[in-house]
Amino acid sequence: MGATETKQEIVEKVPETVKEKVEVSGKEQMKQDMSEIEKIETKCPECQSEKLINDHERGEIVCGSCGLVIDDNLVDMGPEWRAFDHEQRDKRTRVGAPITYTIHDKGLSTMIDWRNKDIYGRDIPARNRAQWYRLRKWQRKIRISGATERNLAFALSELDRDSSRLGLPRSVREAASVVYRNAVENKLIRGRSIEGVVAASLYAACRRCNVPRTLDEIAEVSRVSKKEVGRTYRFLTRELNIKLPPTSPVDYVPRFASELNLSGEVQSKAIEIIEKAMEKGLTSGRGPTGVAAAALYIASVLLGERKTQRDVADIAGVTEVTIRNRYKELTEQLDMGVTL
Image (cartoon, rainbow, N blue to C red; front, side, top):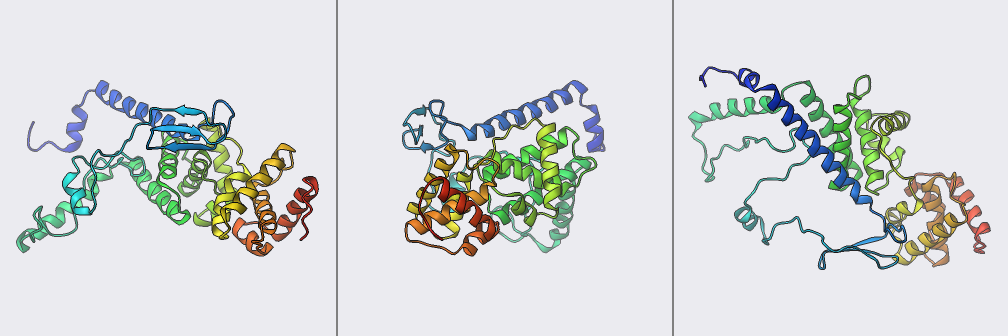
């Protein structure tokens, strides 16, 4: 290989069959990871309950409703060693960071550290610092080459920003990144704003991972309107054939209860009220956040931890009128005998 060959010339010499195999293997890996993410919303095959308990000590997944052991071969994906501080962790770590879809290059590239120190922590001589500055500059440039990579780099940084503001876990960020990458792969971005597709991908990931967020919450942290988020979300789910179950009011109860500083007893009572309402079909056609808020309000009154309707409405993102309407329906239909 000649020393004057450029990166582009080297890439052009790679046979097309090899390039196709690399692209196919990447797509297959993404499909496998997508299927793994979809396994998150597993239901009990016996009673269809979603109350699953991960027992990491026994390596089992157990249904919290009927007690069925769904899986007894859980694999611990963490390291076999333990570390009690950063120094021990650095010494015992034998591998790099795992592959992640939240970075445009999946975290496989390297970066030259901004600190002017060598591997031993010694300062780099002043005469070499200009050279290291140029190396950092070129390293940043070669990490992002091409329109697709620039698109991914911007979109995934936007996704990370929105996720951080919503306080979403890592699993949701990974799922949203996979949805966005699938949209790019299927050429669904053209004619739509990157921010809108990112927000829609995040909303779909929240529903898939059972970490519900409303369209209002997604739109509030993104730079697009609620209407555009909803329209783009419906477009993505249709074109990518994403099947998502309807959001249940029960999914919102833990978060609302935590923000209202309500006890676990109130939370359990609210879930019980919602389940009875669902059995009678009272939640059909009703917004899940309004039902969850009304159930929490009723439970707080019953158990002596009463909150004002305004407090509950502010946390749930609904109006006080909505809470009163749902409250009236639930108390009358379930014959609870509670007064405002």
